[in-house]
Image (cartoon, rainbow, N blue to C red):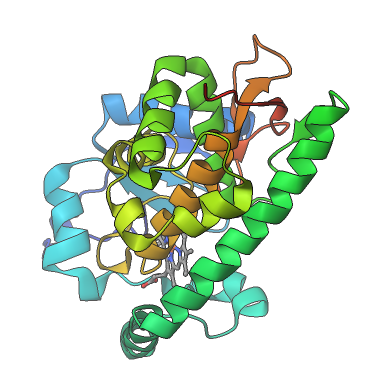
Length: 291
Ligand code: HEM
């Protein structure tokens, strides 16, 4: 999606051609709760189209040639722009998500360097594990009292992605079985091991062996992307995110079986800045008997 003044670069002014206006503010509003489906339906008709809105005109494109041109060939010409910047400024300041050009490149280099240092990697792994042990305590308590838990407590990319993941596992139990088996083999622990022992067994080597879990997380992200991908502005926390997600899943799935409180629930997204499940996801946890 690109914000535009709908000008075609290099086009003779007299022969100026515009992409069709396929929707407007009111139609977008009426279809707001199913926005992504609505725009996908239009994209089946027009590969590139305009959405005419009151404050700003958007051009959407699904044409691979345009996508390559915008995200690769001429990326420098397609920044986030002033509108995006003005909306994010109060919350994010001159941070990496809001800025363009030199400022963006500078922050991207610094952040990538920081995130790839061993000290940050090791520290964050310890924090992830400690937090999952705490979460496991809360889940255990709820399981003892037969209480449902709402697992989408917040709306960030990680929480949304893991919530969709648990939902997808419930709908495809054979995948869950394979993941648990993989975790078992990679950690090589006794079935009676405590959550602390499971945490300690999740070394980098063990996590690297979990290809099936990695692929299942990727498939969840493909089907339910928390936020859209954006060429050279792709996620610099990707390795972090996978490590965190693998630690959470390995520790929790090895210890518990999660069932949806409403077994017939069909999850729908909520149209917000991230793609999270409308109404959250209530689950009940049962200790997993690995024998
Ligand atoms: C499941 C979790 C995550 C998902 C699905 C995700 C996904 C994404 C996506 C799709 C983008 C591109 C968005 C855009 O251009 O607007 C992005 C950007 C970014 N992500 Fe992540 N992310 C996750 C976790 C993380 C983590 C844990 C970190 C930090 C450690 C992180 C740091 C960043 C940064 C700094 C950017 C901006 C990159 C730039 O503009 O150059 N992300 N993320």
